[in-house]
Amino acid sequence: MNPGDTTILTGGSGRQYQFAIVPRGTTFRAKPGVYVMARERAGVPNGYEFCFVGETADLSKRPLSPDKQPCFNRFGVTAIFLIEEYDQNKRADVVRDLVQAYVPHCNTL
Image 1 (cartoon, rainbow, N blue to C red):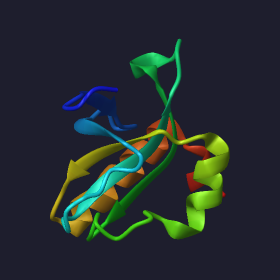
Image 2: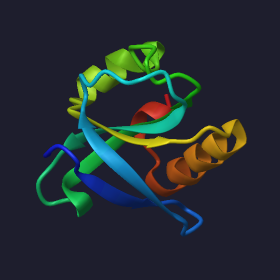
Image 3: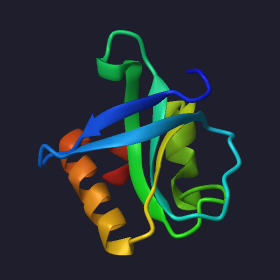
């Protein structure tokens, strides 16, 4: 992962979303967004596997999804995929769409 890396994730609907890829420990500004917890993995599409898709009104409040931290740690999260989105309904729609496509483990616990 390099600074400025981006990737496209495709939801169950076929809609595509462009995400920035940042290290897990990155500090964010107080902005709303959708995030995907990921780990680098050779041999899989985009080189990443995903364990959780979430949304928040404030990305600066850390850790993201505190109740899911044990799952993230077991999975070995190394990166966060991120898009800023101010509309709460749109954030929820993106989360549902991506969860449908990727069925991330920590979303199903």
